[in-house]
Image (tube, rainbow, N blue to C red; front, side, top):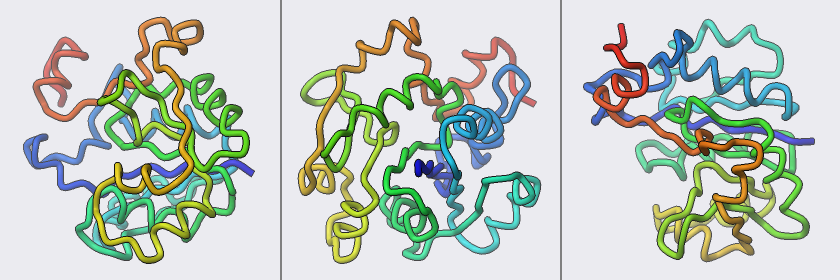
Length: 201
Protein backbone atom coordinates (compact mmCIF):
# COMPACT_ATOMS: atom_id res chain seq x y z
CA UNK A 1 0.00 0.00 0.00
CA UNK A 2 1.24 3.45 -0.92
CA UNK A 3 0.27 6.61 0.98
CA UNK A 4 0.81 10.34 0.53
CA UNK A 5 1.08 13.05 3.16
CA UNK A 6 0.42 16.67 2.19
CA UNK A 7 1.80 19.13 4.74
CA UNK A 8 -0.64 22.05 4.83
CA UNK A 9 -0.07 23.42 8.32
CA UNK A 10 2.45 26.19 7.69
CA UNK A 11 1.82 29.72 8.87
CA UNK A 12 2.16 31.23 5.36
CA UNK A 13 4.14 34.19 6.67
CA UNK A 14 5.74 34.78 3.28
CA UNK A 15 2.38 34.55 1.51
CA UNK A 16 0.78 37.63 3.01
CA UNK A 17 -1.01 35.52 5.60
CA UNK A 18 -2.92 33.62 2.92
CA UNK A 19 -3.06 29.85 2.98
CA UNK A 20 -0.80 28.65 0.19
CA UNK A 21 -2.79 25.49 -0.42
CA UNK A 22 -5.67 27.75 -1.56
CA UNK A 23 -3.50 29.53 -4.11
CA UNK A 24 -4.62 28.82 -7.67
CA UNK A 25 -2.56 27.77 -10.66
CA UNK A 26 -4.31 27.52 -14.03
CA UNK A 27 -7.53 28.23 -12.16
CA UNK A 28 -7.27 25.25 -9.79
CA UNK A 29 -6.37 25.40 -6.11
CA UNK A 30 -2.99 23.93 -5.18
CA UNK A 31 -4.54 21.41 -2.79
CA UNK A 32 -6.94 20.20 -5.45
CA UNK A 33 -4.14 19.84 -7.98
CA UNK A 34 -2.10 17.82 -5.49
CA UNK A 35 -4.96 15.50 -4.64
CA UNK A 36 -5.72 14.93 -8.32
CA UNK A 37 -2.07 14.15 -9.09
CA UNK A 38 -1.63 11.78 -6.15
CA UNK A 39 -5.00 10.02 -6.07
CA UNK A 40 -4.20 7.90 -9.09
CA UNK A 41 -0.89 6.58 -7.76
CA UNK A 42 -1.51 6.25 -4.01
CA UNK A 43 -4.11 4.39 -1.99
CA UNK A 44 -4.74 7.20 0.48
CA UNK A 45 -3.88 10.86 0.97
CA UNK A 46 -3.41 12.39 4.41
CA UNK A 47 -3.73 16.18 4.56
CA UNK A 48 -2.16 17.59 7.73
CA UNK A 49 -3.49 20.87 9.17
CA UNK A 50 -1.86 22.80 12.01
CA UNK A 51 -4.68 22.55 14.59
CA UNK A 52 -8.33 21.63 15.07
CA UNK A 53 -9.64 25.00 13.88
CA UNK A 54 -7.49 24.76 10.77
CA UNK A 55 -8.89 21.29 10.07
CA UNK A 56 -12.34 22.81 9.68
CA UNK A 57 -11.13 24.79 6.66
CA UNK A 58 -10.80 21.52 4.76
CA UNK A 59 -14.50 20.62 4.88
CA UNK A 60 -14.67 20.63 1.09
CA UNK A 61 -12.14 17.78 1.01
CA UNK A 62 -13.51 15.56 3.75
CA UNK A 63 -15.95 13.72 1.51
CA UNK A 64 -13.36 12.87 -1.13
CA UNK A 65 -12.65 9.17 -1.37
CA UNK A 66 -9.24 8.23 0.00
CA UNK A 67 -8.59 11.64 1.58
CA UNK A 68 -8.17 11.99 5.36
CA UNK A 69 -7.75 15.30 7.21
CA UNK A 70 -5.74 15.33 10.45
CA UNK A 71 -4.00 18.00 12.48
CA UNK A 72 -0.63 18.31 14.17
CA UNK A 73 -0.26 16.44 17.42
CA UNK A 74 3.00 18.17 18.25
CA UNK A 75 2.25 21.82 17.57
CA UNK A 76 4.45 24.44 15.94
CA UNK A 77 7.51 22.33 15.23
CA UNK A 78 7.43 22.65 11.46
CA UNK A 79 7.40 19.89 8.85
CA UNK A 80 8.44 17.17 11.29
CA UNK A 81 5.27 17.83 13.28
CA UNK A 82 3.22 17.34 10.14
CA UNK A 83 5.08 14.17 9.22
CA UNK A 84 4.57 12.84 12.75
CA UNK A 85 0.81 13.48 12.60
CA UNK A 86 0.54 12.10 9.08
CA UNK A 87 2.16 8.75 9.77
CA UNK A 88 -0.15 8.19 12.73
CA UNK A 89 -3.04 8.02 10.28
CA UNK A 90 -1.55 6.46 7.17
CA UNK A 91 -1.78 2.74 6.45
CA UNK A 92 0.89 2.40 3.80
CA UNK A 93 4.46 1.41 4.62
CA UNK A 94 5.72 3.61 1.78
CA UNK A 95 4.77 7.26 2.10
CA UNK A 96 5.28 10.16 -0.30
CA UNK A 97 5.66 13.41 1.65
CA UNK A 98 5.10 16.77 -0.01
CA UNK A 99 4.56 20.39 0.90
CA UNK A 100 1.28 22.05 -0.05
CA UNK A 101 3.03 24.75 -2.09
CA UNK A 102 4.07 22.41 -4.92
CA UNK A 103 1.18 22.63 -7.41
CA UNK A 104 2.74 20.66 -10.27
CA UNK A 105 3.62 17.33 -8.66
CA UNK A 106 4.13 14.86 -11.51
CA UNK A 107 2.62 11.39 -10.96
CA UNK A 108 5.29 9.60 -12.99
CA UNK A 109 8.06 11.23 -10.96
CA UNK A 110 6.42 10.16 -7.70
CA UNK A 111 5.86 6.64 -9.02
CA UNK A 112 9.53 6.39 -9.92
CA UNK A 113 10.46 7.47 -6.40
CA UNK A 114 8.24 4.75 -4.93
CA UNK A 115 9.80 2.19 -7.26
CA UNK A 116 13.35 3.28 -6.35
CA UNK A 117 13.25 2.86 -2.60
CA UNK A 118 14.15 -0.85 -2.64
CA UNK A 119 15.31 -1.77 0.88
CA UNK A 120 16.15 1.79 1.92
CA UNK A 121 14.34 4.00 4.43
CA UNK A 122 13.90 6.91 2.04
CA UNK A 123 14.51 7.99 -1.55
CA UNK A 124 15.12 11.71 -1.98
CA UNK A 125 15.69 13.79 -5.14
CA UNK A 126 18.97 15.67 -5.06
CA UNK A 127 20.33 18.57 -7.14
CA UNK A 128 23.79 18.64 -5.59
CA UNK A 129 25.52 17.98 -2.28
CA UNK A 130 23.79 20.91 -0.61
CA UNK A 131 20.40 21.01 -2.32
CA UNK A 132 17.93 18.16 -1.78
CA UNK A 133 14.14 17.77 -1.91
CA UNK A 134 13.10 16.16 1.41
CA UNK A 135 9.52 17.41 0.98
CA UNK A 136 9.19 15.73 -2.40
CA UNK A 137 10.38 12.32 -1.28
CA UNK A 138 9.28 8.81 -0.38
CA UNK A 139 9.87 7.46 3.13
CA UNK A 140 9.37 4.14 4.84
CA UNK A 141 6.74 4.59 7.56
CA UNK A 142 8.54 2.33 10.03
CA UNK A 143 11.72 4.42 9.79
CA UNK A 144 9.83 7.68 10.29
CA UNK A 145 7.87 6.24 13.19
CA UNK A 146 11.04 5.13 14.97
CA UNK A 147 12.86 8.43 14.47
CA UNK A 148 9.92 10.69 15.30
CA UNK A 149 9.06 8.80 18.47
CA UNK A 150 11.91 10.48 20.37
CA UNK A 151 13.53 13.04 18.08
CA UNK A 152 15.05 16.17 19.61
CA UNK A 153 16.13 18.08 16.53
CA UNK A 154 13.52 19.87 14.42
CA UNK A 155 15.73 19.63 11.34
CA UNK A 156 14.65 17.41 8.46
CA UNK A 157 18.32 17.00 7.60
CA UNK A 158 18.90 15.45 11.02
CA UNK A 159 16.14 12.99 10.25
CA UNK A 160 17.68 12.11 6.91
CA UNK A 161 21.13 11.63 8.46
CA UNK A 162 19.59 9.23 10.98
CA UNK A 163 17.99 6.88 8.47
CA UNK A 164 19.12 4.91 5.44
CA UNK A 165 18.35 7.41 2.71
CA UNK A 166 19.27 7.00 -0.94
CA UNK A 167 19.41 9.92 -3.37
CA UNK A 168 18.35 10.19 -6.99
CA UNK A 169 19.49 12.90 -9.38
CA UNK A 170 16.65 15.41 -9.81
CA UNK A 171 17.75 15.93 -13.40
CA UNK A 172 17.06 12.27 -14.16
CA UNK A 173 13.31 12.94 -14.26
CA UNK A 174 13.44 15.15 -17.34
CA UNK A 175 12.33 12.27 -19.54
CA UNK A 176 8.87 12.37 -17.93
CA UNK A 177 8.87 16.00 -16.74
CA UNK A 178 11.05 18.00 -19.17
CA UNK A 179 10.88 21.26 -17.23
CA UNK A 180 11.01 19.56 -13.83
CA UNK A 181 7.87 21.42 -12.80
CA UNK A 182 7.24 18.75 -10.17
CA UNK A 183 9.82 20.47 -7.95
CA UNK A 184 8.39 23.98 -8.34
CA UNK A 185 7.28 25.48 -5.04
CA UNK A 186 5.52 28.80 -4.56
CA UNK A 187 6.29 30.66 -1.35
CA UNK A 188 5.01 34.16 -2.00
CA UNK A 189 2.31 36.13 -3.77
CA UNK A 190 4.99 37.50 -6.09
CA UNK A 191 6.00 33.99 -7.17
CA UNK A 192 2.35 33.07 -7.63
CA UNK A 193 1.74 36.08 -9.86
CA UNK A 194 4.83 35.21 -11.88
CA UNK A 195 3.66 31.67 -12.73
CA UNK A 196 0.08 32.76 -13.42
CA UNK A 197 0.94 35.92 -15.28
CA UNK A 198 -1.79 37.80 -13.38
CA UNK A 199 -2.56 38.46 -9.72
CA UNK A 200 -4.32 35.58 -8.00
CA UNK A 201 -7.85 36.38 -6.86
